[in-house]
Image 1 (spheres, rainbow, N blue to C red):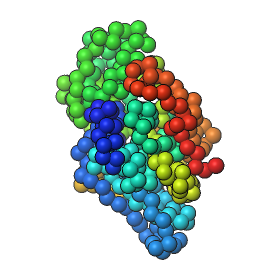
Image 2: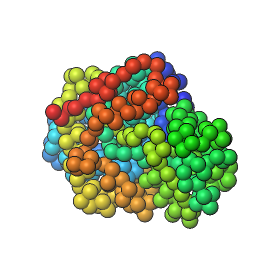
Image 3: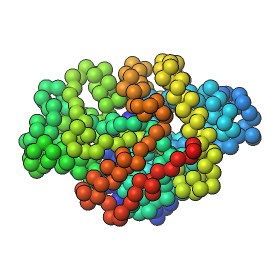
Image 4: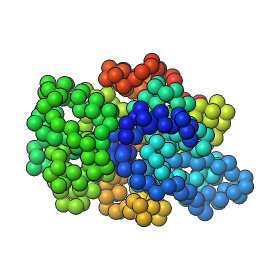
Length: 353
């Protein structure tokens, strides 16, 4: 779905206390139309509004398949049963999910692991992760099949479209070096938000930042044959594409509310896993059709990609491992993107135990 230089974003965020990641869903959030809240009859099924504690969650982007569990849990009253009322907000700026939670203006946000590491290490932004939403990466190197690009070795002499972020540049550099191809043999083209269109119109040969669960089914629906591979196949450490973030203050003073949110969200995920189409129908009823209309076929295919990666191998929703954080810390440090030392313990919080 959904992404601007991290340092600038983080700096601006600290000044306002109120960066963008590497994929199109991250980049295009600059054009989001503001925040909105979602509430349904299910929220009040178990208790009256005045009895529920409000929890505001800022999405990484407009509602799409990856968020279906939230809307399911709202509709079914799972949050209400935990004593909370969840309000869903859409970001109006690229870093809202991080900056609003850090400033205490939202309780939970959905954001990106590398950006959180850099924000905490470089600017000491007071946020931590309370759970991984996806257990693996969704970001890919995408191209039209006719380009015959199946790995970094095929990128020599080609142009790669990206959104101008240091993170994407570091990924490309690592992939090329791992494949034994000179990094300067590719030309990077900053295409802003136009990752897909720059590729389909021939402006670039491939892009970095598209999502396997969105752009691939979307382009195939439009009649394009595509090829793709993951940066993690060529030296870039595995990551959690999306994570739940909250403020240090929430963790220290209201961990019970966060635990309630995670428990109810896990129930929504179980529904999503048991009956994807029913969960998708609830999502479609809550879509933001004006700014990000959803195609049911595309979102159903997205569900098929997402369901295997929304829980750990043990089936645990929200699971996260210190080793994943450490691998990304080490890589970011090697690439010169971290100014200060940081540990996984500075970035993780277990609110359920």
